[in-house]
Amino acid sequence: MKLQKATAFALYAVLELAAEPGRQRTAVEIAEKYGISAHHLAKVLRDLGRAGLVDAVRGVGGGYRFAGNAKRLTLMDVISLFEETGVEAEEPVPPGEGQDIAAGLRFLLAELDAQIGATLRSISLSTMLKLIARRPWEGVAEIKPTRRTQTARRAR
Image 1 (cartoon, helix red, strand yellow):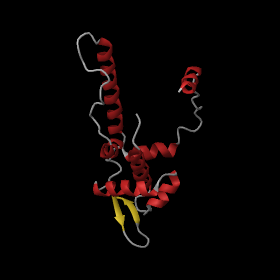
Image 2 (tube, rainbow, N blue to C red):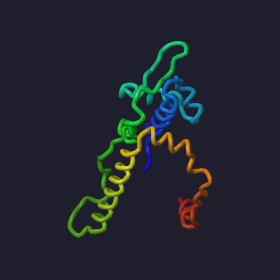
Image 3 (cartoon, one colour):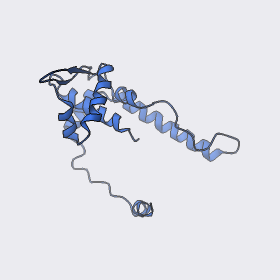
Image 4 (tube, rainbow, N blue to C red):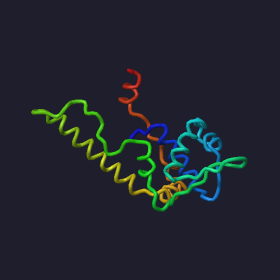
């Protein structure tokens, strides 16, 4: 699943703010930490504010503070603010007679989308923050591209 930049920025910001809900952070602080555009992040934070997930504090010493419920708010709740979810992507081949391969691929992709959606709806921000604290990715060997993948990249 590939997320739009705004969606990824929203997840960074919400999780960063939810990790320390009493602390205010500026858009610049968060943007610098993740190496992203502070201007783009400010627009995302404005949208998160409209959705009631963050509160903006104006003036000197201002910033953003988490305003949601980390135990109830899911990753999908944040993602659905920025992505069209539940809408099927444009199909490469319209459905028709004798297109079993196309129908099979559509079926499989719909099943995968449903599984991804269910997983994202089941993970609260609180659960995600616990996962991040455990750092399960450390000690896992990096998956190296296969020879076929490397050849395909060179061909592009």
